[in-house]
Structure formats: structure tokens, C-alpha cells
Image 1 (cartoon, rainbow, N blue to C red):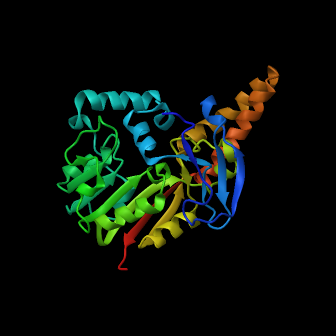
Image 2: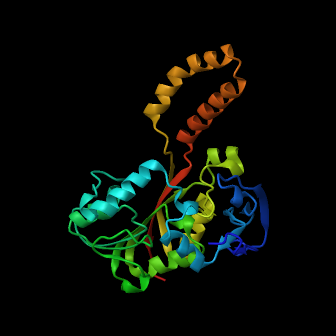
Image 3: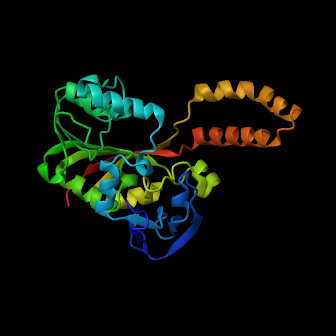
Amino acid sequence: MDINNLVLNKCCPLCKSENIQDKKKIQSKHDEINLVFSLKKCLNCRHKFLSKFPTETNLQELYKSNSKYVFGHESDEEYEKNRFKDEGFKSVLPFNDHWIFNFIDINQPSEYFEIGPGLCRLYKTFYEKKWHCEGLDLQPFIKAPGIIDDLKKIKNNSKDVAVALDVIEHTINPNKFLKEINNKLKIDGKIFLSFPNSDSFKSKILNNKWGMIVPLAHLNFFSKKSIKVSLENNNFKVIYLKNYSLASPKRFTKNLIKLPFRLLKDLIFLNFRNFYERIKETVITFFDMINGDQMMVVAKKIKK
């Protein structure tokens, strides 16, 4: 895909306000992208988003081609993808526990729908519990019972649970995305979302160098206010909203114990850059565990 074939955002994708602040050029590991994008913030609803979006057609091409721009190709993830390609759905290990299980009884089978199931761990968990499962994924190698490539194949007002973890930040039109999910849910049906938290300490300190800013993968960056507004505008009522951290407290503690020795070594060898970076990383991780840069949301469909 030609990354110059993009659409300039002149207003907020959520509230359509033109009261927008430019938050500087983004920093990406792809040099060709750094020349193209900047991060913008809506001063009306506090939503952040990229200055340019791909078209719907181009975005689908990126996912279907397993593009480096949207997947990054980390070694661990590549291993799991190759395993899925070779061994299929039968090789997938279901979850023993998940935060979603705090809000539904997984042992009471019903109608389940997941957008972007990826390697299908959560999807298989529900499938093995005898739920009627359907999922939408654009990656061609994701093959499992009930996986489809078009939302229109799912009946309206038919689902009790809809899951979209780490998906909404990838969408061009979040309001359209939520509206389509709402159409598939029964009244009181629940939607489960997770995504990067643009109000986090980490995002504010790192600004345009925040690790969650990954063009063309992540297009929209939600705050608590902006996701709540978007859900309520699309016939949902938020029943749970919480930020969390991906950092491991156990690993942080181990690194904290070793930190004085590493800092002393840096000083002995006059490596002041390493000295500074270690302190910076420790402080950021500490506050990230308090005010995590990820968010989980549960909402239910309400009557119009």
C-alpha cells in the first residue's frame, strides 16, 4: 500500500469538532512514516487521533497482507502465528481465567461474538464451554469454527456477548464500529473492550513517543471521557471502566533491587546516558502501575 494515499483528518473522528490541537510529529521505527503523521487532540472531547487515516479499502489490505505497519512482527507473536498456521484451531490453548469472567457466567452457554479474535485463545475458551461462537477477523490464516469475514453474516439482535479486545483503536470510524456491534446485540447484551489509555501518566510523559502510537496500526487513542461519550452516543450504558498496566509488579521489584548496582556501574564507567535512561524507565514504570496505559470497559446495550 502507498502510505501517501491517505485521508487528512480535518475534524475529530468522534464528535466532529474542528477545535483540534496539533501534538507534534509522531516517532515511529518506520522512517517513511515519520514524515507523514502527526498526533492530534480534540479540545472538545479530549480524543486523540492520527492526522491522517488510510481508506477503508487500504486498511483491509494492510491486515489481509499481514503488513509490518500494523503487526510489527515480534518474534514471539510470529512463532504463535506460525504455529496456528501449521496446526490450526486445535493447537490453541484456552484461558483458565480472564477478567471478562467477572461479568458473565461462562458456564452458562449463550451467544458469543468476537471481533479480532486473533490467535483465538478467548474465542476457544467460550467455544469449549459450548457457547454458540462467531467471530470476525481479516487475517486470512485465522480459520476456526464460526469465523467469518463480513459482519452482515451475523443476525441483528442475536448476541448476548460481544468482545473486541485491542481492536477499536485500529478502526477508522469508531462510532460506526460501535453502532454495528450494538445492532448485533440483544437488549442488555454486553460489549467488552480494551485499548490504550491516552489519559495515562505514561502517555502524557512520553507524548508523541508513547509506545502505543503505532501508525498505521493504531489510529485512535481514547480517554475515559471520549470512550464513554462514544459508547453513550451509540446506545450503550457503561457499567465498568478501569485503567490497568501491562507491567509486571514481580519483574519491576526484581529490577528495582538490582537498580542501585546497575547505576553504580554506569557511574564507574561514566555511562551517564544509561544512568539517566534507567532512572527514567523505573519512574515511568512505577507510575504506569498506578495509572496504567491500558483500559478495559464493559457496557450494555440499552433500549433507544
